[in-house]
Image 1 (cartoon, helix red, strand yellow):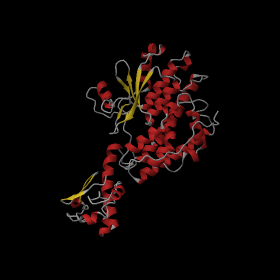
Image 2 (tube, helix red, strand yellow):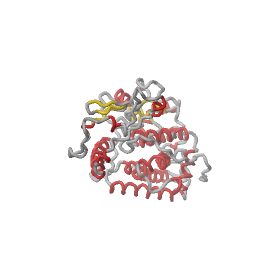
Image 3 (spheres, helix red, strand yellow):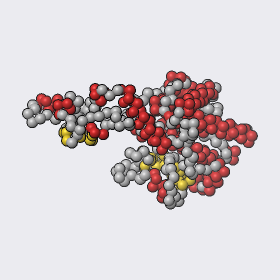
Image 4 (tube, helix red, strand yellow):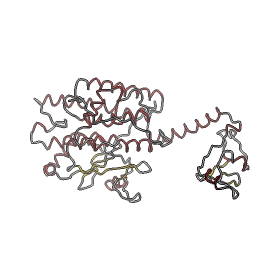
Length: 419
């Protein structure tokens, strides 16, 4: 609480030790301070505890500790030199941390690492076929590890909610640990919480890859089935279709399974869906990360322009249809919602996605977001407070202060005029 003393050139405060002999610039000549600092000079910049002769009143006035810095500018140091040196060191450390957090191409464009456990459509169908008896009995056959703050987990949670698969797909909720890694959120003490890495290693002996979420495992064997969100969303849609009593619903990828006049129309619909999914993933879902993790101005410019150009196109599309592909919810809507939900509150300030805002520039996207949100079970998948906290406290290179900003409030329960 403001206590300090001077010994051998060290100023010791309750936050740590500041060594006056170590304050030199990268060229060893920027700042020179005497190793012996007089108490009278320190009293002008630090608030010491009162001496034994001090009155009670002075004690009360000194309760709040304030460190006013080393006042290097008052010692004649050129401000420009100080800023230049600080910028050099911060930029260097920033690049090192970003290299660990987000790999990039030679041109500075963020490159998302591939998932280690994936399933193609034929593998998904084979997996579902092998579980048909359990599906009919509505037994728990999959365990899903997911955190609400993560947009990739969020799309899977939305698919699970829309398909009503709570009994078939058991949910294990995750939370970020102090280190930023995922751990099981189960009410246990900090030391007892299970890290997601332990789940990976229990399933795959000697596993040393990335331990990402969402993660889908077999409930009985514990075998890892998939950790690619798009594959899991597709799996959940096919599970729902497979449970239908109508044969024509077998391969339908629409969430409420509308009927088609012919196999040809179904095929065309699925091809259009897959094309749209790629656009949404590349330019919007991953596009916001390309903005935030860009390592060059050109890379950022490309990403932010592509992001908002695509949002403009989706805004136009939604002026003609209730949902992205017509009257029915599809995987495309499930892909898009988590990013739009986070855009104004998170990606705008943190990832510099600042050209436009959902609440003031995209009326169709705004009402579409309300429409999707008001589907049964969707509000339970949304936690903006946890999302803000995770992004702004865990992404240190983008937010060194760790401050969590106040989020704009969008009432998603208002009428949406989309019916």
